[in-house]
Length: 191
Length: 260
Image 1 (tube, each protein chain N blue to C red):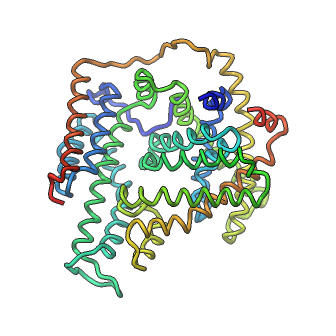
Image 2 (cartoon, chains in turn green, brown; image 1 turned 180 degrees about the vertical axis):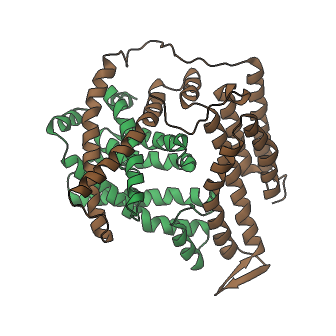
Image 3 (cartoon, helix red, strand yellow; image 1 turned 60 degrees about the horizontal axis):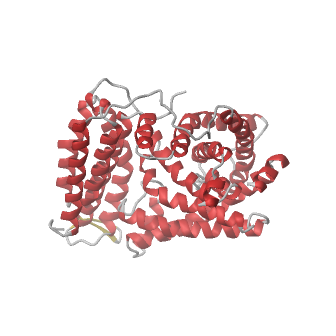
């Protein structure tokens, strides 16, 4: 409980809405650039890495609440739990010192991607009938055609796209952190 | 500054209801969407309960329009994927080695109906309730103030961030950044686009935190609210009744009362 209180300083409470806005803005930007990624959890991973697992989890969960409220993507609520775990993992990896070298950053992204794929597949399969209503459904169709059931096909689709997405997310967060002013870096080290 | 949402103001009894009452409606619509057994029951609930509720709030057209555009991509994917790949006996037509079956198409469309009811129920709450009022109602029931602050602030600031992202994209383009290039090059482009957005906003965070502290943000006391909420005994009975109905639906589903 103590670490929970410590993570949620006024600074953190102001940082989280900004991180959520970054999730949304970058997510839309990536759509405009027609990239085969989502990159809608950059802010979540950033808060996890900078502040800690609790703050990361809160950012992920509340980001999906905000997606739902904004009317841009009301179904986001169904994925709030997965987003929370992504943020928590980023916090754990940050604490473990995985954000220090490119190799470790890729490993952290890979693990997060695999976990996200495994947790998302049952939601896609049982809540949304095995589809996501987006372009990735073509990939799901290919795996169904190959003989997999709804859960298997969504797991395979997530297994293909999630690790790439989360590795890219972690690499971008790492690149951004390199550019943080020294004064702010010192502040986060103290949190 | 107003929170950015799809709320539509309209003088109606639905809008006047306590946000908790509307949240209860939404929860039970979500339960019904996954507890009801077939497309007929799902569509009937949508048409006979959800549609009149939305109409009473003057929200019928916005609700139907949003629900249609949200569910359409799911319906198309579900009809194709379930139609071709779910087990079924009655063949409708074949496309190469794959056969569209009546049973597969039916199960796909049933799922689309579930999503219609679930998303429709969510939209009803969002269209008829101001986010700050919903958060206030939840705060009165013990939701930590910090969580409601985060959600409402994020809703206020995200349009400005989208604007800023577009400005950065334009600025980098005017410096000669090519966005119409191959996939790997476009991935590398993301760093000069995202870094200014993130770094610029994190520097602001510290200033905002200090400004809030100067206004007793973390001072532990009961803070009064500018907005007030109506609630009544009738509404709390209504909430209990709807919740009971939801529990009954789950019970019927779990005991297999309905034929699958």
